[in-house]
Image (cartoon, rainbow, N blue to C red; front, side, top):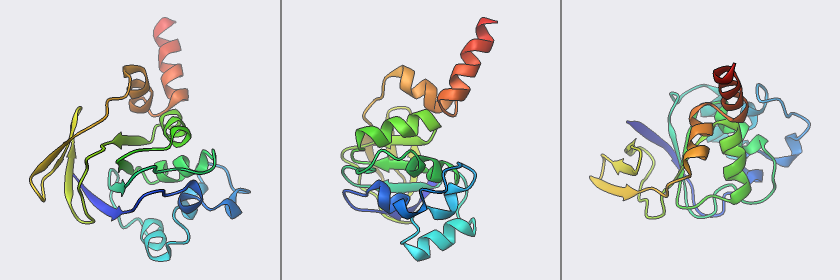
Length: 163
């Protein structure tokens, strides 16, 4: 079970997640410091490591819309956060899979900051409200890449298994 650390609305853009003015910094080891930079209180808590790994960010519709910058996913991966949203922009979803950021699509989700959520293979259980919500199932190949930690670790494991 994990706690919701922030609940965001619809159309959270990649510029909100990782502002474009920091695009000179693209290394996954350096990008996390700029996560939600313009949400200063939340950014300060992230940088202070106030949240444990696996903490959940809630998004509404169209989470990760905007540009194709993969840093929006890597900055969240750097804190080992989980994104649970009603819907996710296509490019953000693919970048998240490639980088191993756990993203769960849950169209009927109802959750607030502070709620305790449990993510199963098919559902999101809100233990605070007692409600259960169905997930949109990603193809097994995409789940496998995400579970392996991203495309590079997934490919490495596949190649090692063949050797």
